[in-house]
Amino acid sequence: MPEAATSPTAERALLEVRDLRVTFHTRRGAVEAVNGLSFEVASGEVLGIVGESGSGKSMAMYSMMGLIADPNAEVTGSARFESTELIGLRPKELNRFRGSQIAMIFQDPMTALTPVYTVGWQIVEMIRAHEQVGRRAAWDRAVELLQEVGIPDAARRARSYPHEFSGGMRQRAMIAMSLACNPRLLIADEPTTALDVTTQRQILDLIRRLQGSYGSSVIMITHDMGVISDIADRVIVMYAGRAVEVGEKQATVGAARHPYTWGLLGAIPRPHTRKTVLPTIPGLTPNPHAMPSGCVFRTRCAWAMDECTQTPPLLATGSDLGHLDACWLPGEERDELRKATLR
Image (tube, rainbow, N blue to C red; front, side, top):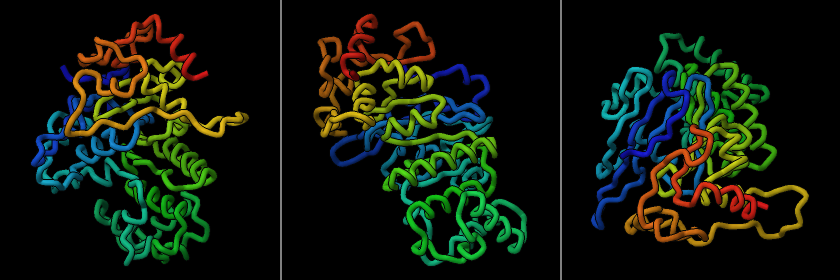
């Protein structure tokens, strides 16, 4: 049975993903980068997807957008954007959605932006690819967008090249480009990576403000539970290609039920503490060619037991039916274990 990250938003979902799987066929055998992921995104919602590098967060989004160019990759399952099935669409058909309906803020704007064209030119081309407007009108719109994302002297800076922008300004330019056609869904792939904490705060505030102004839904991909607790409405915690915990932010952050989520929460730096070394999750993420049987987290879990050799279903184990986790630990022990772990 596919793992389901269901929610009360299912009936009014803008995006509905079911049993999404991304498999790479290699000489050493098949590797499942995404294994049975299911979730919904409602109109106007911010969904946070969090996990370590290699957990399948970005891969799931790239597969849905048709951005995996590897001929050895196989994508199965369903990703319905309103009434349209995205999985299996030809590139020409997907182009009707990419940019205009679904836009993406990539992790590294320096590689996402073309270095030989000005920032303004690239935004203009984005607008004209999806809308029947003249170059002058598109240019005025590009300058307006750069102003809206907080770039000073936007009319002049629109004629600058990406290397003439700082990291934070390049990220703002990427956000401006993503919003150029007023998309219904905005996918932000670790937009604060490699930025200083002040700029991170500004970028998150900007995304939240623009999300409110444009009414877009947002999928925020990150490895940082601090970002999730700041911006998300609902949360999916991913590990080794699978969803291991799903729920509203207050429940997932404030009353986490999976040991992996406890590890992520414990790694958040806390003010007014004298700890010089942050807690870490022991061990390493599993080798994709040699995944452990059963619970994929059991080789790193301090509470692993015999039952963990069987794959746990993603179910509600507490009183909150919308808060799901995939763990065999007895439900009545979770609260005490969490408090002891995160004290």
